[in-house]
Amino acid sequence: MDKATLLDRVGATGEERMLLANLLDRATQAQHRNIPTATEFLTPQEQALARDLLAIAHYGQDRYCFFGGYESAQRCVAVFLPDWMEPEQAMDEANLTCLRGKHREELTHRDVLGSLMGMGIERERIGDILIGDGHCDLIVSASLGDYLLQSWCSAGREKVTVSQIEFDQLHIPEQKVQIVKDTVMSLRLDAVAASGFSTSRGKMTTLVQGGKVQVNYKECAKADKLLQAGDEVSVRGLGKMKLSQIGGLSKKGRTGIVIERYL
Image 1: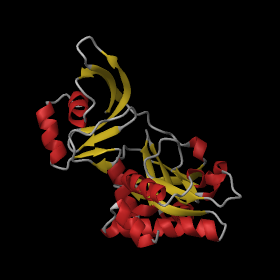
Image 2: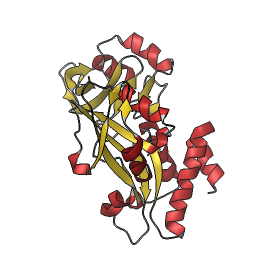
Image 3: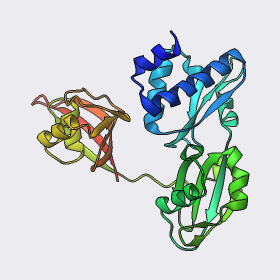
Image 4: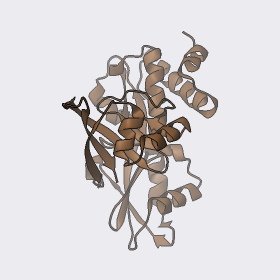
């Protein structure tokens, strides 16, 4: 199957089509030239599209992985491995580096990202930005590390002192979640999401049909889509949740569920 047909099959258009075409080129290069290759940082939505594309292309799951510096990273690079390289070596081929910026006053994610973008740095070269107390940790392309060590000195009105750190030194903020236990008549998207976000099923159906809901980072306009354990649902204006567990049926025929709502 040629590249154009693959991109048509996954439904890629515009900038997404260009991004995925480049991803296919990297995958082909790793196979044909027998060398490891990696992309720039991909958003969770782009990673979902990439997985669909690689599945359609029958690209072996043991020949690529996504790595963003730590296990739960949102922004990741796709690393493609030749046959002679083991998946455990992918981290070394991702070409990433970690930096820590220390500052006195509190900074937000927007402050830090804005300062980096103001330096003319492309967003695709910056991974997750982890905000801590008096410091912020960055995962960036290795080629960008030396430049930031020498040139990044402020964010907002705050002075920033930058140093390089190892992956295992990253300060990863704890994800706060609210556990919601409920029963639903079915595992339809509108029913489960209404429970997770404490709203009516009718309102959730309207949000789904209005294109404001994503399931596993892909827009879903079908309110009757059946969810599975592990599925993540994002609703514009309401936040994000995960259907973490599906239980048995109650005497009234309702299904028990456990939802993690991210705060």
